[in-house]
Image (cartoon, rainbow, N blue to C red; front, side, top):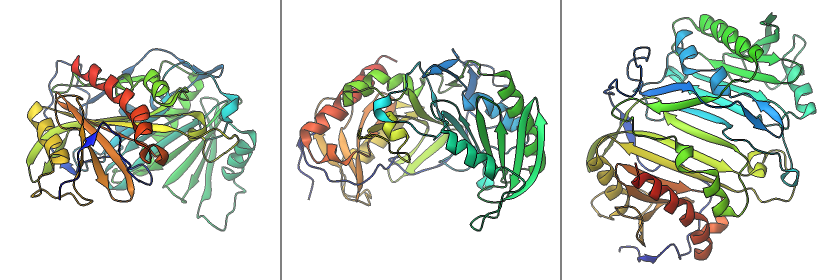
Length: 413
């Protein structure tokens, strides 16, 4: 039996934790144009361009690094790291960084989860991850622990990590450890900051050469100090796709929750084009997302205040053709019984938003996804804050304002 139609979002939906993503995809071959920028240096299949942005950023008075500037996709490819392109739909660059001037909020505590991080996926389980620790996210006790771990005297009964080397590169003390959770863990230590680099070389031809090249490039970039952060864009046929955190802004977050975000966000961007494939057909697209959270949520592992951790994730699937977005939106929301929905049919939402269906996608015990379509883009909003799904009015307050703002921006593209 079809789920009852909702008036706005005023219905009780009990969920658990955030589940990102709304459709099953398989890899497809990218068709890359040249009008959006110089693509001559891009690996085959890559559609994401990385360029210098504006800045550098500041946070709490600290001039901040951007980890994806220090560990660039270009440097990774030049080092021989095999990027995950067109092989697995989950291959997305993850850039967790500071994108605007921000201030540390003492009422929300503080922590040591790092100020900026960057993750680049590779084939065969390859993964590169860099995190930089700067004030106010450099708890002195955490640095002491990190320096003990990255030392020739380190021993542990719980890991297989072993000391490999210590050297100075561009004036930075660099310590390399083997084993544990990656092929290598590398620590970079300077007076005002430190950083950790995890290297899983995957199917790269010469894993040690990858490691050595990245150690040199990251240490050199750290020694130069903070520079303008990276900016991303797509080549044709996706040159119209904007930054996800320009679509979902800090003001949107404040409007939803009534307090500011941390100023440090997580962006995810498809490195290559992927192919949506299900019973309704196939469609090429790229995926991006922007996650905003308050400072307490960003440091949930270091609870130091009574502030409520709040967060929202806006995931966007941008299709080559509007017909692809229509197909995806219909599959997610039209409730056609001949199409499989493993956790039950969608819950329709009776409201004018975008130009397609509006619904809640059910994920079983997980929090539902609020989804709608605008032009060539399908949007899904999720949150781990379960209380908003227990109260229809609260859902209206938290989910609707950013959804309406994003829909307006997408309609203007």
